[in-house]
Length: 312
View 1 (spheres, rainbow, N blue to C red):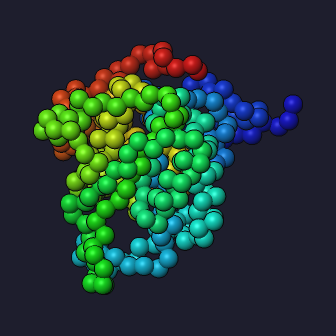
View 2: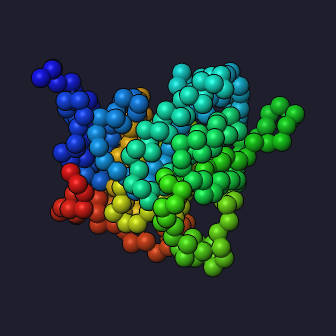
């Protein structure tokens, strides 16, 4: 047998590992409902066998090309990092095909995936989804209620992002909590335009990721397409907003993040909500939690057998 290679990842049970590689923990919560891998998602996803109920992905938008914007009244460069540098259309398509193919292998047959983006990448994502056999269900328009101003005054102010919702297979039914979404929308069918604010100051107490999404957005996505206790994967976890939202409403999370500085913010955020007062404050600020009357989950604090329903 060849030499065993260590992969640093959260311990989510005795995973069925490939190629004789050992997965070692980066971080796991004491109740095993928040798990974090620190490494390249392209390298780590093939190393274990497990199927998730839902995936949320906020992949690179490839818009870091020296542009400027306004934050807190100051003109700032919008470059996010080397991982977001502009690429050719062919390179963007290749990138999206690769990660979407890997994620499809990690979805249950009735599972769904949500992908956020702007015009820089979302059309490529949509084409790749169709090419790989996913079925697109909706394209959500997130209309930000507090967008940054357009300082050039030569275009309409950018105030939206798009979120594609797709299921794994054309003819396998997916889960959608229609009644809850209707309830959250004052007893009217919820549309595909969501008016929600961008990230708030109280969401940055442990540090900030440059493309961090608001908890309100992820909470609605998770409530719409999962049941309590189900597993969610985020292959580009950033500061793990997906995981924090998941744990606040009783879901389980596995995130993969390449940059250690953002993985460390994720750990701080998860430890922060173990404070019951902070946890309650966060839940009170997310309107969909209050409207849905979702009780504070016992999963992340008290569950004795976190793997009773998992094939580990």
